[in-house]
Length: 80
Image: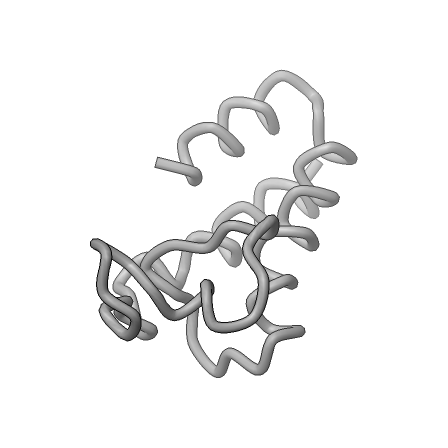
């Protein structure tokens, strides 16, 4: 879902905003040690909260098929 939001913003000429969002969102995962992109990420969460989902402490998937999303968005930003 995040991809479609950022893609639409790129189409509207908001590349600077999209780049900031990419750095905050996907970059935030990387700064926490991610080696792949996570099923869900909320920058407001702290510590072990990043691993919890569905009310379970270690329920989150850490290798999601949506991983190409930031690269597709990056292509839209750099092609303008």
